[in-house]
Image (cartoon, rainbow, N blue to C red):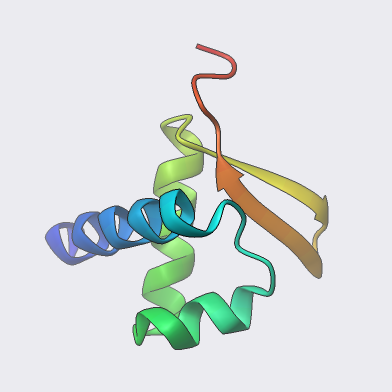
Amino acid sequence: MITKIGIIAGEIWEYLDNHGKSGNLDDMISTLGKDRDQVLMSIGWLAREGHVVLEGEASNYTIRLSLGEGK
């Protein structure tokens, strides 16, 4: 499972690199074609590692690459 989460994290990073921000989380999940829970775990991994920034309210937030912020 950890390997799969890491692979999805890489796909999320690539998605954000190409799109700038996530916009609607459901749209990103649909575009990636991955399990919602695994995408959320992968976002958590990326956030913990400082690779992404979550902005906005919990029910309506966007995700973007951190570009080295806080490192």
